[in-house]
Image 1: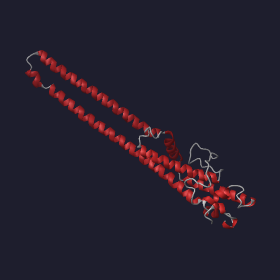
Image 2: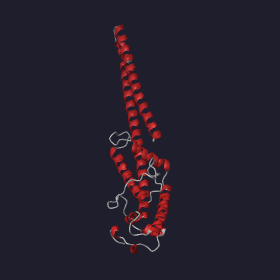
Image 3: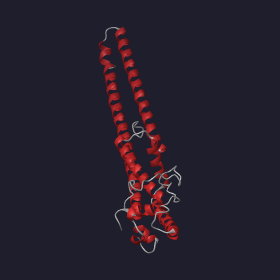
Image 4: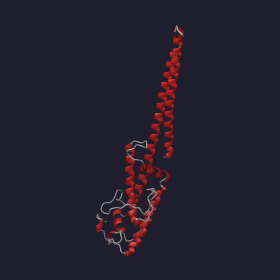
Length: 259
């Protein structure tokens, strides 16, 4: 097999263009042969090659699709596609989101290679919202990522990378939820310590000793008023902290449901 597909001749190809033979051919050679008038295949051979290549790519797409959970993968793509990497709205570190987006773009380029070989094969399950006829352009002289190797290599790379990005996304989401729970526990601890401190101070202020030691009823009324004011402030602070906690908890509960 020549290193440069442009110097390809019929003698470099298998005698029979069977599915097994096509799976062993480099993708660069398949791209050359998939173009009508390639100067290598005659009209009859071109028709046979196109039919066999479509069959091979359809089988590859079917095997990849069976390894993907459609709902989970669609949710991952929707999450990556609808979030601005600078906004931080995913709740995950921006570095993780950017890495997931790079992997998704690499998968998209590999799908473009597969669609360019056999445009009639539907790979929309990998790119939700993209029709089977919306294949991206692939330069034959400057192939995209994943355009080297064979059809089997392309199929394996797609399956592995789709599975990897789903696992990484799930791990990132678990980390996000764990961090939210840690924040909630810290808030509860802070609230408990603060409330206990305020109550202790109120008990001390409202102790019997100041009341007994006070010579005038005005002083005793002042002590009682101060005690009540302290308790009211403590209750207000507790209500504000509790309201904030409930709001954070509601957001944390809504986030998994939205994902």
